[in-house]
Amino acid sequence: MMMNIEIRQKYGIAAERRAKKLRLCDEAIYLDQGGVLTQEDLANLLGTSLSTIKRDDAYLMKQDVSLLTRGMVEDIGRGVSHKTKAVVLYLKNYTLSEIARKMAHSPSSMNRYLEDFLVVAFLHRVSYPLLTIRKITKLSERLIKEYIGLIERAESEGYKDRLSQLLDPFKVNEPLKTLVVEGAQ
Image (cartoon, one colour):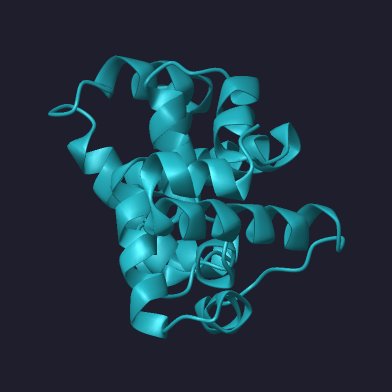
């Protein structure tokens, strides 16, 4: 692992600051047992402005580097949820352990994200409205919208087969479905 001085000499001050940000976020989560830093925390710790932190975040996101700040972990703010990013990687045929390593999350978290996505996909497939999906899953409306958008983009982005394969266990036997629907009337 490169030291800060080596990073600064080889890649510049911005790269050194980004490396420090990544390390601070990792330490907050792993060493402080689940703590997460805000962008404001990072600005204070690094002695820089909030706008610089936001620019760094945008740069890191373009590089496909997950920065685990409070906004990302708790799915607040404008960015695409890290949960959606994890599901996209799974749809691209990465394994849960590969995704966990790539995103610096536990495999159990990756599994939970995938299970939540599959429940949303199933409920969306059988035409449940957004608010009902939200009540059933207890997920944020924003995350559900991201998942539904991902489902709708599946074909154009080449995930259709993988998504169908994942949803196969949820297939409802048509005669049973008819019986349930007719019996409810």
